[in-house]
Each structure stands twice: as C-alpha cells, then as structure tokens.
Length: 362
Ligand code: ACO
Image 1: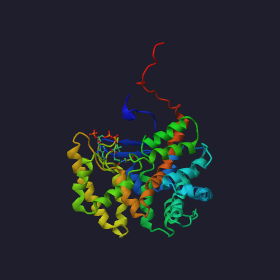
Image 2: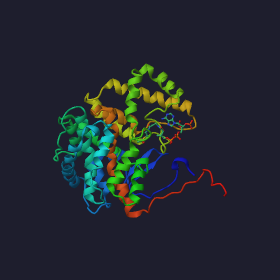
Image 3: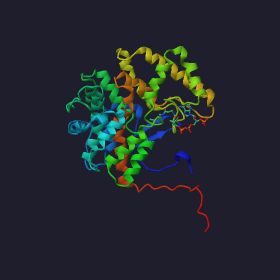
Image 4: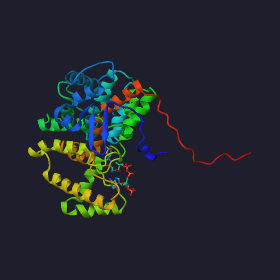
C-alpha cells in the first residue's frame, strides 16, 4: 500500500510530463518555458485536445468556436439564484456547470471550457450587487474574461499576463484533480461529470485552494522586516507555508518562474503594487531558507500557487475567486485526460487492504 499513491503509475499519457528532479514540465512535446513565451491559450488548448475529439482544429480555428460557446453558456447565468450566490465562487461555478448536459463530443468539451470563463466573472459581479456582462465572442478567451470581470477593455499587458497564466496551468501530469477526472471518465460517465469531479478535487487547500491563503499570508506579514519571524512562528504552530512544497517537484516549480516572467510587463508598466512584489520576494527567500533549516530531509521550494496569488491579484481577481480562475485554465487539461482515458484506458478500480475487525466465529 502506498499512502497517497505516491510514485504509483496509474496511467499512460501523451499530454504532459512533470520531471520533479529537473524541475521541468513538458506539454505535448513542448517545454513550458517555450510554450508560455510563444503560444496563446487557444493554441495550447487545441494542442491538448488534438486527436482526442472527433474534430481537428488549430488555435486560430478554436478561438471563434470558443467565443460562440461562451455566448451559448451565458444563458445559464440566469439560474444563479440567491442560494447559489451565497456559495464561495468556485462552488457557485461548479453548481452552474452541473446544469450542462453530459457528453463526450467536441461540443460538450467546448461548452465546458467556456463555462467557468463565463460563470466566474458573472458570479463575482452578481455577488457584488452588479449585473453579469454578456460575453464578446470577437475577443480572445483571456481578453473576454477580464472584460466580463471588470467591465472595461483590459490592457494588452493584462491580457498577455492572463493568457500566460492559463497556458501555464493548462495541464500538469496526474495531479489530484486530473486523476479524479480520469477516474470518472473510466466509468464512461461523460465530460461534464469528469469536470465536476475535478473541480471538487481542485478546491482543497492542498491543491488549487492555496493562492488565496498566500495573499492572506502577505497581509499578515505586512512588511519585509516581519517575514522571518512570522514564518518561523507559523511553522512552530505546525502550519504549512502556503505556496511551498510539492508532491513531485524536488526543486523549484517551473510554473513559478513562468508566472514570475508573466508579471514583469505589468511591473514595468506600473500595473502592479511594487511594494507587494518586494514583500513577496523577501517572503519567498525567507521561507526557502527556513524550510531548509527546519526540514533538511525534504527539499521544499516555491510552487505555482505563490506567483499565482500575485498575478491574479494584479489582474483584479478577488482572492476568493483564485481557485475558480485555476479551474478556467485547467478545464482543457481535465477534458483531454478524460478523453484519453475513455479512448485508451480501462475502468479504474484499485483495491484496498482491509484492516478492520473480522466476523466472530458462530
Ligand atoms: N510548509 C511546511 N512544511 C511542509 C510544506 C509546507 N508548505 N510542505 C510539505 N511540508 C513538510 C510536511 O509537513 C512533511 O514534514 P514531516 O515529514 O516532518 O511531517 C514533509 O514536508 C512532507 O510532506 P508531505 O505532506 O508528505 O508532502 P506531500 O507531497 O503530501 O505534500 C503538498 C505536497 C500538499 C503540496 C504540501 O507541500 C503542502 O501542503 N504545501 C502547502 C499547500 C500548497 O502550496 N498547495 C499547492 C500545491 S501546487 C498545486 O497543487 C497546484
């Protein structure tokens, strides 16, 4: 028995590879550092889905189809009643996605990719007492998400930063939410069911729920001089430092640097609070040093969630919505894995070791 299935190989995939020793992520044969500098979200989505649905297309062809899908799912926003809007944003998004029909075809995949991108900004605006904004299919996915969130046309740097984020998190091996998606797909339940299971796995703080608490940490630390003492006290209380550590990476998470790079144009054009960036850099260095001291046997470095927090905050997403933005980017990876599993895999059905009492002899 391997607790947490650590090192257990449970699937063969052509989608992505996480090399934890080298700190490298490959998506469909291309290294993330190259992908993030050269590709749009739509082109990476097309790359991930290539050969896994009944239709073939590239990023340019996908863009208008995704725009139409955003328009078509918007009708479901009308179902957001007071009870749904009282939920945390990621739960409200999940509840609206549950209204979509299940299926395994390309159109279902498109609707699922469009759904969180439309539902999250709409829910945030409704929760703030405003009106949901209809999608604009002429825009790129990233530009439209930001416009639906803020109501104004985003800057080129903001669109590029969100696009880099969506590319960076589009797929990442057999993480917990992707595994959940594949388990559901192995029963042939359909893509909507896979995505719902995956979102449910993602929202936990050990997976995609960490970046909100990263910002809370910055707020509590407040100034660079407090960083070392605050981090030491948190570890003394037995807490984990959010945005650090990973099951696979034994070195720096390459996605952290991809996102750090994506922040640079925003910093250079004054679209980020530079004080917060300086504080984050101090916290990062202090945390790495203190974790090395306290956990000498376990290499713990920064993970994707640390820079996710800075980037999404800079783009105007409230912290309680960060997990929902993660879901927007990862949905295409969940769908691609679900299709791969349905096309090539068997029903996933592991066994357990029974350690409970045995029946009494009569
Ligand atoms: N802060 C302090 N100690 C840590 C941290 C951390 N962030 N991460 C791991 N450790 C310690 C554990 O306490 C444990 O120490 P021990 O052996 O003395 O008890 C040791 O390192 C190993 O920890 P595990 O729980 O076995 O590591 P695992 O591979 O299961 O955990 C995880 C990976 C969940 C990401 C963990 O590092 C963590 O909780 N990090 C903080 C939350 C976070 O940032 N999550 C986002 C991950 S990225 C993503 O999913 C998109």
